[in-house]
Length: 173
Length: 251
Image (cartoon, rainbow over all chains, first blue to last red; front, side, top):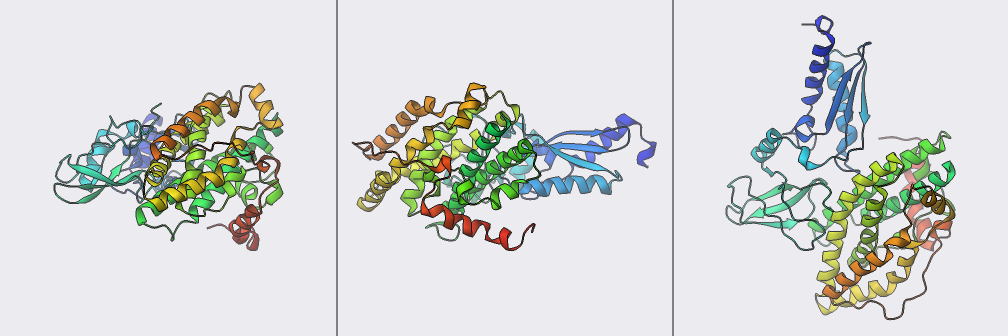
């Protein structure tokens, strides 16, 4: 099936599906759509695709890589001109991670964000995180920051496995 | 107005870049891997915020300069960062206290800027404020642990207060450029956040059993006018060396 045979709405859906499949280079079990950072994909009448992404963290080093990957996926799918735009507002929050994305994170060994985390303004408040392997909530934080800006390091005191926790990222106050 | 906005964006960007660079200097040197990751992560947030601000500043200036030109091709006298942020890391207590002094202010300042009449600035602020929550929390917890820790850690935290406290006043200063933005509803007067900042710092000091300086030392200022301590030139020499040796080089 060639792109030319698709009507505009079908092309738009196709372009979205192509961009949506791009994995996060640092957390490859989830896609840009699972994370909620793919905001919009538009195809104009000349066939130019514009994918709009929003960065997770201001300094996330994966941002440039993700933009390049989305553009190249669209090229490979047959869209000759694909542009990627960055949109800062509204600011990304982990509330935009889909339920499917959360399941994928868990299966990969990363605990997804806990929705009712304590406000980070409260010092020494602990977030109850369930172990992604044995589901026990008898876990403890090892470090507030991890191998990527979005994660903290935890340990399960039940099955003794260390694991990453995808921090809750949204404005509390 | 364009130049007042440009100058203020650059001053804020310089703050984030200089502190972000200082934090990156800990890489390979921190006492435990977890803290090294924390310092690098906070540095990364700050450098990302600096990039957002420099990119916007470059667009406002509209003179063909890029974010890299602004970061790598301006010299010491052109930098407008706060003096506290260019100070050497010294030790972990100094680094964490500086982080706390700054984050306790900047979390509130970004929060205020989310209501800016300038949509781009408000969007940059809305991203940054969430990141700063974690910086303030992490550094405040270390101020408490070290202040209320061993004799050695408490002595180092007290020494950090004695060294750094005099630099905090500059955070609340208002340049003529910033004043123009405040009058125009684009920026917030930092002075309006001082009482709240001081209450936050005092409550953390109480938990840390660290004394607030009895006599407020005279405020050290000059960074906003480009008058720096001897430390900034060395920082810039290192940070800019690659770009100056290989102009236009990209990864």
